[in-house]
Length: 164
Image (cartoon, rainbow, N blue to C red; front, top):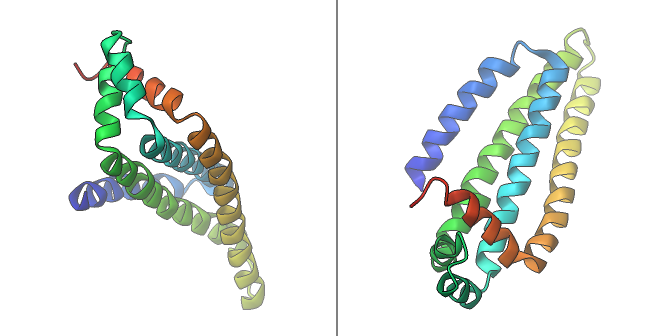
């Protein structure tokens, strides 16, 4: 996980810094929206994996439900799935949101000399990003807990196109 996290952070950090540094507020805002969406979705997948019922997937696998075998594997490895989805991807997305937020702060404060205003804008952007992320993660966690089997089945069906 350590090497995967470093590799993904380097890759996405390079892309975000390369693209967002010169793109301005609109592109940086779209980047933040994208990174929050990815973070929220992967957090939902991690929670769903830990709360899914392996017995249901084993029954579905016996009934030859498409993707159920992958669902069994995801349930058996739920701690790894959750760690990757919620920790690795979530933390990388949070870092990228911070980088995107910094691009917005730089763009907004480019012509401002008052340090107090710059600090206020910086804190406000950070708080807004954190608030939006936490709000949507809270909503998705509730959905993940209530619909964990269906979420993991959908993920398993998607993965079945890539995994035999």
